[in-house]
Image 1 (cartoon, helix red, strand yellow):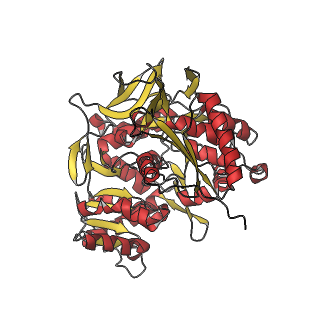
Image 2 (tube, rainbow, N blue to C red; image 1 turned 60 degrees about the vertical axis):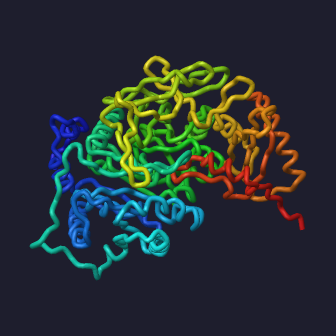
Image 3 (cartoon, rainbow, N blue to C red; image 1 turned 180 degrees about the vertical axis):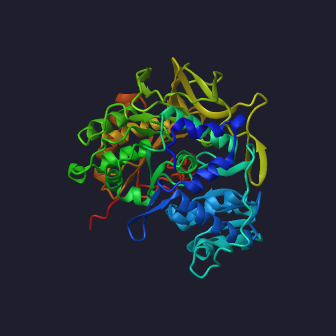
Length: 562
């Protein structure tokens, strides 16, 4: 296959030169690059070339077509990190069907959380491709809702006894139009009911082009490492689909495997010479919390050219600590790169180039990192009717990557205003042409006339290293008594703690918070491990946590002394 530069492969992503057949033909003929996937069952990494994946997807498409899946069919797809998901996703695209990825059962702490996540979505879809262990839950939900669904089990789809490809009657292969729906991306639902963001091929290809151009990537040399889930916008659009549509080498491990053995993922970066990867602030905190030098003595991160940090509020201290610790393991300066994006923009809104790094901006003594310049084809404006201590405003976005509609409880709803702008509900401002993200408008609270975000308290406590576990949330509570101001409750997880230990710890935490923010915490709760609830993308479920606390469902977890 002829060597192609990053610029060459992007030409047909533009509307005036759009040609999906080129993407298809490039996949069919790419024998030199592919996807490495860690199989959690056997703890071994399999490798599949793009041409091999394409061929297997054709076989899968034929089977799905016989099971009723065709052009414009909306299909829920359980997004487990394995080769069967990869093949099935591409098979659905070949058929012109519309995949809507959902987290697998393994992504949830409990059965009830999994059921609650999918319960409100299933009744609005007639097809669900799932894994064997998920079948009973889906069937029970459908029975409760009196809903008929075409349930396709991936285990059966890929079993040796399943029908083989019929060479004489191949499945019809769809060539999508530029404005056709590519997939539906469900949001994590950190503050509201999950929305199904409708992403068109126009949105997807323009965002891929923006990311690829900004990072100056090249399919011949780029090696992408991904642990993020394939039901998350960064894991799906940012890494999997970017790699698939540009035939860049990709290595994937499941989120569960990554969380259990983070040092092993770092070792894979070293072994496979990964150049591009991404983290969240929470993950960096956990890595630092668990860090033992002996675990990393044979690991070098010198191949990394860009390590994005996004998906949630970013703490300067966390970035600095990570850079300091891993510099001795080969991490180069300015590789750690804060960035900003959201599912409604397919993924990326702002990024920096490789090795460009970030700068620090300070407001009222609080520091925030810049998150790069706006990617090509996207426009940002600030609505200053709501600001942070008089600085900046609510970020609104418009452009070729920005989705205009979403599906909520089965209804197609327009999400942009009359001028085509989408309200992100994030508050930010510009330093020159660099964007700074301050926080979510719906997690901002005011104490004594000053603005604060919950994540400011949370990051402070995590970086203090006073906590047993890096799991903490700060929740504003509105008292029914009009004479009282907004109250603040801090909930942190413990493996177990004595009452006298908690009293001492609470004094230390309170002193730290007052010293750094001036805030007085009304109550500290040392909760049992697993009490703090997160979305599938790792964000704290603030509304749920507030409701649980106010109902009295979260309390101190004291260790039995006997």
